[in-house]
Length: 144
Image (cartoon, rainbow, N blue to C red; front, side, top):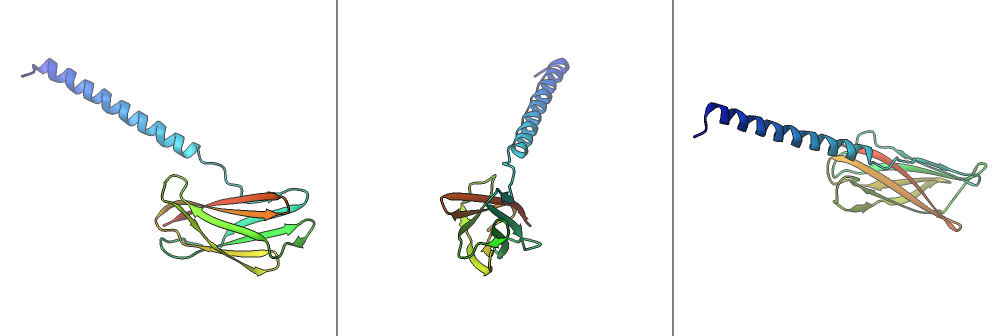
C-alpha cells in the first residue's frame, strides 16, 4: 500500500499525463482545422470565369444537394456543352468520393446534383475541361 505522500505523487503524475494528452489533442484539432485547403469557389483569368454555388440551403444525409456552376468565356459569352464533372467528398474522412449528375440548365449555367451520405463537413469540387486546360472550383458545405 502506498503512503499518503506516495498517493499524492501518483495523482500528480496522472494529472500531468492527462494534461499532456489534452494538450496534444488540442494541438491536433487545431492543426486539422488549419490544414484545410482554402476553397476557391471562383476562378477567373483573362479568358474564362467559373463559379460554384450551393443551391440547397440545408444539406441532409442521403438527400440530394444541388450546386450551380456558372461558366463564361470572357468578356460575357456563356460556354455551352461544357465538359464538367463534379464530385463531393469529406475532406477529413476517407469515406469515398461521390460523383454528381451535371446538366446544363441554360447557356453557361450547369446544375449538379449529389447525395452526401453522412453528417459533417463536405467539399464539392467541379472540374472543367476547356480547350487545353483543366479548371477547378471548390466549395465547402455542411451536412446536418
